[in-house]
Length: 375
Image (cartoon, rainbow, N blue to C red; front, side, top):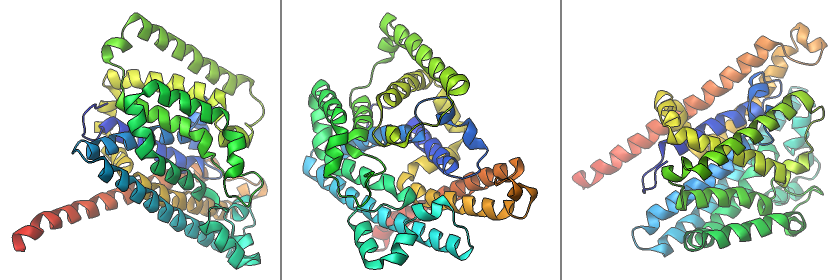
């Protein structure tokens, strides 16, 4: 990964891959979801997305601050928090619209409740107020308020992490340890609180920041200590995989993910270290160059997350409708072919969205570069 001010190809690839996996993981009846990270590790694409988000945030802040104006960098992330809030509102609106479509089609599934449409129909003004004030966060929109908090904290967290990385990490760990009682101060109409506790997940974000600002050198990674860490990472990763595949019989409790349980952190750190070795060896760079469309998804992270949430719920709805006309409806689940078709269609849709976004960005940049010549 780059240590300069330019974008990192590998980081954009990881973020794009995480977004594609998030889409797949939220399709009810998905086939490929059974092969994703959560099936053999005690973490999933959410950890990857948040970690990479911290890494990319530190890189973006550094690019602006390198010009000598930290005030501009700070203000940019205040604006970024507002942009994320607007994206949250758009995603919430799209979730409500998806819920309305489900209701019209007579699909009374769990997703319908999660979209908050029943609450909206029952108490419209109260529900709208709750959504605007983050007290109610419809379905896949729930991760964005956490990101808005991180954007607001970036102007304080990044300079601290740059000057005193050990203090920054220790402080982050302390907040993580106190995350559950601190979450009681968050506005929420749900007794369970926010879907993602930002006081817990800031630890993963801080890890990303510190890794960007203080990267470990290749020399350290191949030193005796580095090789021992690699061996330990393999032991942890394979151990988690063995437990998940052969021993675990019950699904993980939701509050473990909500509050970023310690075993999830350990599982992710082991995989992150192994991924860092793949980056050092050039494997991820070659993979990214071979799959530029995935990199494009990562370069448009926020927009692709919003569109991806709609793609997921649309694919789930379409899958349910398709299976209702086949033998699979008798057993309450889609066929293998239907599930796989939904997965492929969803991924293709997100890749197409990213391509369109990139083309629009290129055209805007071309128009901007020509504007002075005609002024």
